[in-house]
Image (cartoon, rainbow, N blue to C red; front, top):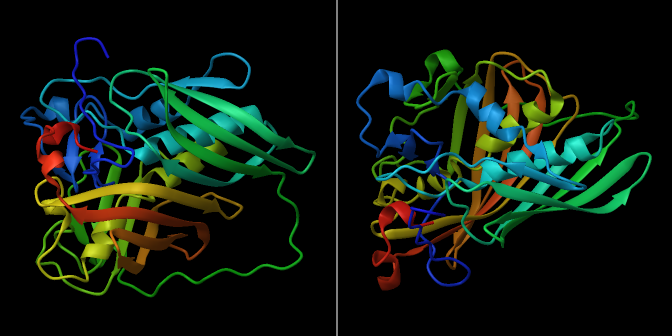
Length: 331
């Protein structure tokens, strides 16, 4: 990346990012929803929006089974790492375009290397199977000639029901009674149930987290709607795990604790459409030996189940080699 130094330790050496440490785009970088860039003007704060995020997801065809996507614009003094679920969202859109007439049903990603803000990514689609009812593809995301992550995507043609049931929406406080959480993006609102500061080591409770989320606009296209749902699925997993352990929180990431998302899986339950609020429910079922596992669901306020997801993440002590890397470039 010309003119920009990006120093990221990965692939079995030093892991130091977590999905709450998110590079949202050229203007805003947040650590667990708190800004670390020194933005002072409201006009700058408003430049990043849901509409712009959807534009980022809408990748461009760049040859047979190839698509290109933007990552944002690198600026000095800010974190230079793209969140993994941004690329997963782009892969979902790419596969939907590759298989017109089919609906994306699931995406399973493994994050192998960091994606830097600035250079575009190339999504290379390996079609494993393309039938009349189902199709499978493996999407490899490349940047600067290096493969950074792989996403296996299943698509199909939805059919009528033979049987149907779904997990009910958890009986928790509604968005009107939840705590407002700062979200530095125009058109996106977050409210947390029974949690005030999701990053704080003093926010102790069961290893679960309920987050109400509202978007404006809600995309009409099926692929963009699913990409938007997938984008938030990994954001609060590590916070959920840490909540059960006093004295540790995501505010310590990059300082005393090394964290990183390693995998994310999202399954969509047709039909995927909504208005108003979405409830993201997170449950950490295990943490130990340096890894955590979180599973979750996405319900509408009316109670329809739109998606299920799971995340594996790394949580380990910060090592000496980590501290030698600029915190803005740690992944």
